[in-house]
Amino acid sequence: MYMLKIILKLLNPLNYIRAYLYHRRSGRYDKSSYDLELFLYSKVLENDMLHYGYFEDINISSDTISIREVEDAQVRYAENVIDKINNVKAPILDVGCGMGGGWLDCFFKEVSLLRL
Image (tube, rainbow, N blue to C red; front, top):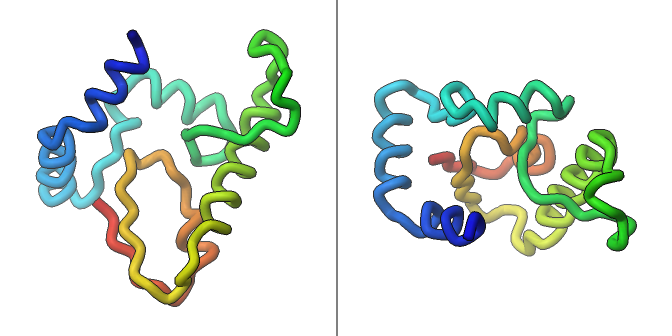
């Protein structure tokens, strides 16, 4: 049920319009500044990312995962996504919540980035 709520939020175009309008007014749309859950994660995790991760041990119990393992898994996930980009000279559209880190900036210095 929780995943369904998340998926419905992601598919709702009004959320993207609200984010775009907020971004235009304030210059930066950073959900972590008013979402307590994102704020907590941003303080607990040492990196500036909050997204899925690739874990080396797929059989690890969620009760035994450390914060360090979550951070490492997030870095592996980001590196894997970047490796999937075929045309490194094409423009990249970065649609995020403000918790994705500066990975695109680090890997693609000569690419035009459009962020919403």
